Length: 499
Ligand SMILES: C[S@@+](CC[C@H](N)C(=O)[O-])C[C@H]1O[C@@H](n2cnc3c(N)ncnc32)[C@H](O)[C@@H]1O
Image (cartoon, rainbow, N blue to C red; front, side, top):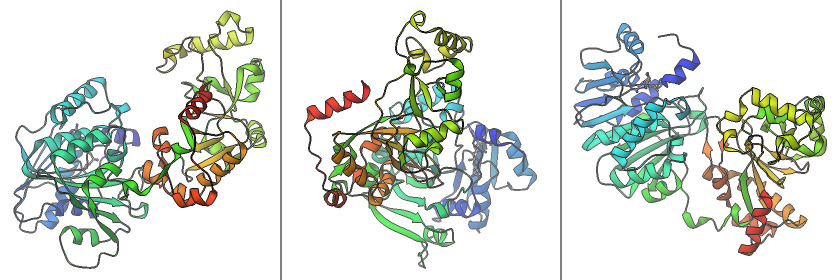
């Protein structure tokens, strides 16, 4: 098939569905009644190949579109498509089918929002408004609009089978999206995967398959976790009665799943009495807007002659922090390795009131047009830095290694790879008890209830979600910490973090 580099693949979202998954997704339509299936993003024809194999009597006609003429041509050259299929080069977003459809299958292009043009984004907004009546948050990738437009094109009683990245359930836009789906469609089955069984081992995202129909909603559906790649998932879809030991099949309450998120395991809403917000406040690390410029090594600071009072100790990469405590000694080691450890932390001082060395450095920034960069241009003056008090704990939220809470004995201020965790009480005993709670494996295990998961098993957690982290009651009891505080205390401590 065609030879494209990784960048081109990313721009067109070309990640092919493996055969075992394509068959499972096609099996949903094999109810004996289906006459046609439409795939808006056919690519190399994974679903048609599966259909040819499973629909032995060849009763189902296949329609497909793809924006990339070369990929379609390749598939024709490889004799993937035949006279039972109609495939054309067409942009599904710009030129969707004009009539309603009874079956839609897709592995839509996974193109993140920052790769989309302003015109495309405008069109996507119109699509979401047309079908859902809402604006979906601009951070939704194009796959979300493939789903929305496809659901919008379904005939009454029609069925849809989509494989999507888990951000479909976990992104900032997810609540609105699922509110619309939950109220207007019937969620029939959802298939999720353990990392050992992931359909796309080389891509850092967890995949989920949704089987949804345009029927009245039902209160319970089957949620499946695939533990191991095997033929069992296909047998399950084909309603065969056999061994399903590679699958965990859960009858799940639709309302609960919509609330918790389809990518996550079921939770009982009342199961958790305590959340992290009962003990601490969470704020993201500093977004400098240009780390190369503002976040510098000790050696560079000395060469530039920047006085120490304008610099703050900071930490930029999760890789720079190895254990679960960061000390002054660790910081020194980073300096010795030539890693940046100092953040230029200016306030709104006028340039002319600053020492010459700094004026020179600011001019270098201006020559490089830093003052026009998106985030920096919102600051006045442009070199003014965000403020944080060094937090007691740092939370490293994205990395190949497990997410963890780190005791900040070095008094560093973290950049955006971390979240800052400020205990509601500052006394040593309380901080130490909270430390034990946060690092309890049962607490850490709950991160997957609030975080976004990636194929590699890593989790990313936003500040608001981390504040919502359920803290198991037994852990709270064992450590003997009381989430007792007044609203005033909370407020003062929060403001304290910014002062
Ligand atoms: C993730 S691939 C899936 C292909 C195939 N169905 C499969 O499952 O292997 C997505 C496909 O969408 C195509 N695509 C990207 N943008 C599109 C658009 N606006 N309209 C139609 N197809 C598009 C890409 O060229 C790519 O072939």
